[in-house]
Length: 353
Image (cartoon, rainbow, N blue to C red; front, side, top):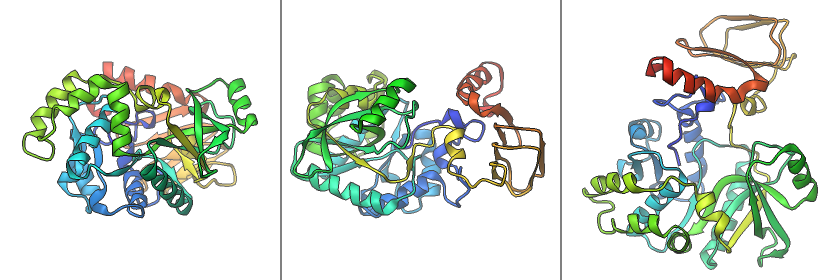
């Protein structure tokens, strides 16, 4: 899934070039390139599909030379994750109705790739043999209020003790609740990665999102043909905006979770990026070769590599320079960045957002 805008990473992430297409950690690879490389270890290149907004098709083909145009599934508008997944399901079904599927966001960080591959293969083996929906949970390292939580039943595992029945989903809790969740040992963070057979997920759509399912079912025979584009434009104009979590996962009774430690971050904010970058002696995380810091600590700085930047007297700030936009914001106020972008959309030229 590679259709998001990543507005919390403004001004680097913008509508025309969002975060999944950026080398936001300075590794030499964009986030979507890293995700693609990981998934190539699990399935053949020709079986990897990218679902994205149609305006990003050229970017994907440019950044992923192993992908063909037929593997880029272009949405005409943004309708959240349930329609995105339903559309991909029907395209895949035309080629292989027995498919076993991994759904992964394009913009996450996974540092422990060997463990990721092991866990995903375990899940694929389970979904191939059982009518179930599996979500990849992350073993929580702290009571974070920025993630959704999955409660599992410790006494109701599958034949594999690592795969447990899900009891409840909880959206971002307050700190007190998050502390209780982590202390109980019965909760995982919700990573937004899923594993299931095509048959199981289609059955879930038929039962829980029947209207949406019928919209995409009308296109059977048109997928992977010249008639697909016009059909999808009409389908999306009537399609409900709803997440797969709310529409399917929270309402299903056959959901399992694998809780894993894969060095994961959804890289949702500049603050989360800060924790994954190297720090200098004053805990500054700097992306940029010509940055000079004076009396400054605990900052994240991201500037063009050939631009000389001198900063003095800053503590706990985000500083991002993209040549045409400069952002200086307290780290503790980073949630306001979305509001900044909304205000810019009202009062400034679209090139700035």
